[in-house]
Image: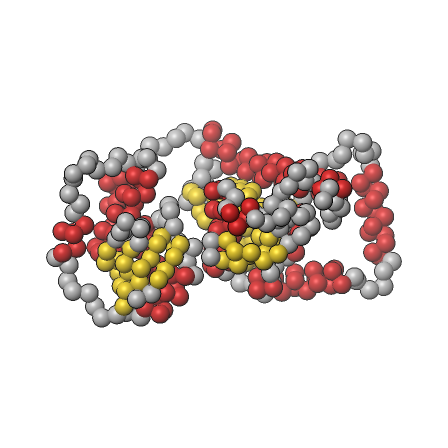
Length: 367
């Protein structure tokens, strides 16, 4: 296939104009003339075309979404981007509770409309995600942004499992192409269901030689950088406050009502993560491991069942503790050589459902 001749919709020049980048060979007023012509044609149409009716229905349904004015993980919002046009953003999680400008800083990804241009790391929203505005129907898991909290229209809201699926595609992209992705034939304009991190997702295909999607992604990568620029500029201008010591952070965390048994497991996980990142030196060879002593004097566990859990690398220990508490469980051992933890719960089936729905979890096996 000669990819340079593949025709994708909308044309790249239209995408460029929507992002405020006018092609160099186009007169200044050409886009305005074309827009006026298109508006006139629609005005003369006695009945709205089906895509416009679907858009109107989606936006009507969006008004029914509950919104308290605050941002939440999984929210699809609209923020002003290059050229003054609104860009969709899927919110992932809070990066800073109070950023340099005082407002919280969130991580997320751009969400766009052009399904034809989707690559293997673009997640297309599906009927289960409705209602959502089609203007943000494709999540660019390869294109992260950082934005500050402000008033923003709500374009949709993804559940925890779907947000976890986007994170899985993000992680896959960060690691580089897996064997399963490498086996997909590059084919611009094609989309299909595939597996990523245990989730089923609808994406495009990998980029190939002379792929027109390379230029498309460059446009949106620049748009994402412009959207994130105010956060980066404010961070560079703000004085850097000294980070609290590990002991202080640990005392604050354990003082927030985390049970001792969960707290000990969380401390071990945090130390393991620091070792893997090279931020915390490993214990000298021959140093005894005190996990056995630490748990030996604990009371006998309550009746229930045990699950073997692998947490995602970098999972926050406090979030893990809150998740385990949510189903009345406790962490009783771990990690073993395979990185697995043993979690005991009064209702193993309910605990397994809660764990599988959480983005903190990589794998769960039952008793």
